[in-house]
Image 1 (cartoon, rainbow, N blue to C red):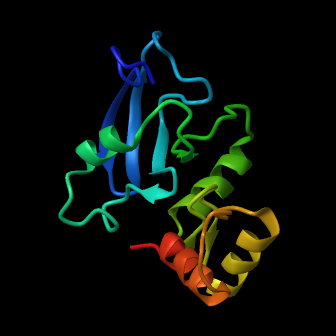
Image 2 (cartoon, helix red, strand yellow):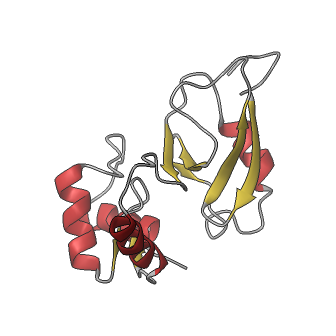
Length: 148
């Protein structure tokens, strides 16, 4: 993030967070591309549910800074070389109504147990600075991953 030119992003709000519509050449943002959705900045969530009653664009502008830790997912698949059957399978999976989604990679789950196991095995959504009991952390994960 440049003090004079900002983050060099054009964004729009979506339910899940902040959608990147354009990445400007300067200052540029390595690792971000059009279609990426930023769901949290330094662990602070930007989704509609978490920001109820708060101007999310202002919140994003206040939170983003040089070397900020962003939690993102791509709304479009990165690879475009897939077979038709893979596309059909992926579309079916993406259109399925999930009860839980990993806030980091957006993998979907119908039940909390497999989602929790995924979070523990991958380290997704871990916050090393979290000061609380294990049950408080599990509750935080549950709130991060609940859909709707």
